[in-house]
Length: 175
Image 1 (cartoon, rainbow, N blue to C red):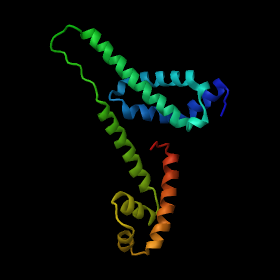
Image 2 (image 1 turned 180 degrees about the horizontal axis):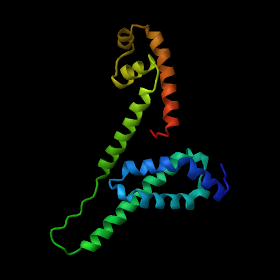
Image 3 (image 1 turned 45 degrees about the horizontal axis):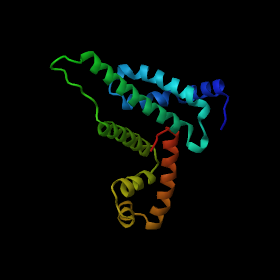
Image 4 (image 1 turned 90 degrees about the vertical axis):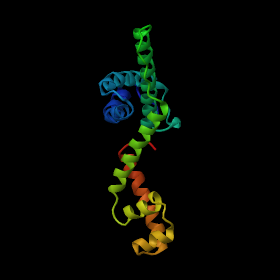
């Protein structure tokens, strides 16, 4: 996908700006930094825009990765700046969010999005996903709980997974 730099970027910006802001808000611990980080993200995307290739993944995934990397760079630079400012003062401790914490937070956000997407599914597909995939019921136990055949559960599970995938794509959720 080769796009004209300025036109392609403006189309991208209009289409994905809300999603990119959402990514930044989810990983940023300080809501006051979101606009600053977003500005850096869109500058980095603009600079890297000509290098985008569909072979590397979807446009949104590529941009979300830039957002995540920009956030980590921003956070690291802020911590260095704070250390320089407070260097030599006693009683000051540098607090930095651990990468595990950020990863846990990201997982919780994705899990919430997944649960909301499951809620949009029609019955019995919603129940089949919840029982079979979330609660780890066997095919047989799922069919007994729902009072339908195992074959119907298998068929409906495939349909449910397709519907769920479509809903997650519509919501631009990255798994």
